[in-house]
Amino acid sequence: MRRLRSSQAIRDMVSENSINPSKLVMPIFVDETIKSPVEIRSMPGIFSYDPASLEDYGKTLLKKGVRNVLVFGVPHRKDPQGTESYNNDGVSQSAIRTLSSMGFLVIADLCMCEYTDHGHCGILKGSTVDNDSTLEIYGKIAVSQAKAGAAIIAPSGMMDGQVKAIRNALDHAGFTEIPIMAYSAKYSSQLYGPFRDAAKSTPSFGDRKTYQMNPANAREAMREIQLDVDEGADMIMVKPALFYLDVVKEARRTFSLPLVAYGVSGEYSMIKNAVDTGLLGEAAITEYAVSIFRAGADILITYFAEYLAERILKN
Ligand code: PBG
Ligand code: ZN
Image 1: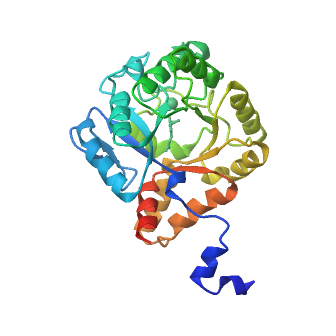
Image 2 (image 1 turned 90 degrees about the vertical axis):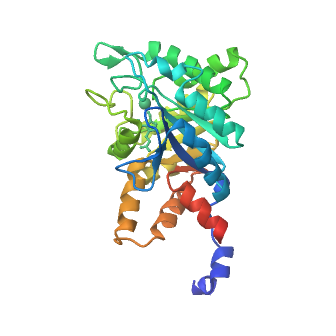
């Protein structure tokens, strides 16, 4: 076996997987409530950007070779219905407009938890999220994001029927060519903790277990994905990535659509903290990323995208 491991050149030549910036997506937080970029307390090295600073950060990303971004907006005003989520001049719509005009492939995260004052991913009926009234809002958000120039719509709320509702809304508004990247198998995970800091979207009561998946289940993930495929998803996703590589692998085996894995905020923070404190060598970051491709992902959403793209450009 060692004949094929004798030099970097031969190791590179026989490598089964590699990290290519065109397969990476960098998430970006745009926050209307701040006046200058703010480092996210639980995500060292990752910042929230005020709308006016976004273009400068975009230029930095382009220089480093990042071309794909996933946009999250934090609005100045939250209410029970999350009405800012479909404001054509809202924070995410403006950010989508800015970034797409700079030449990025812009993926719009579609959810309501950043926009509702209660922090849930949809409209409440009593103390639970009402599925079908939420779908109507999701349709409006999708159209406003498409109007703003989003290249791909990525619904992350885990309502039943969300892909079909969004597909219908987009088609009726004339956006038949815009693909849907479905957060299909999204688990109810502690690994979203740092994200909720950044997006200020921690639920004010309860949790997301009535809509996000139970971490104990893998077969159920295949059902979730199948439903999204049937409803017209163009790409499917497993989220988180690191604790769910078995699900990534099974999805790869079962489905032929482009498969996305989301290496979430908690994965980033664990690894980044370990590297920054010297507990792990820096190469842990590429080992982490390549493990997700090895499991079968075609596309990786990761807060390390900026770091990885820059590193590849330098080599
Ligand atoms: C919104 C959303 C979340 C993430 C992506 N979209 C948070 C959640 O469901 O609470 C998590 C991303 C991350 O942790 O990096 N529904
Ligand atoms: Zn949400």
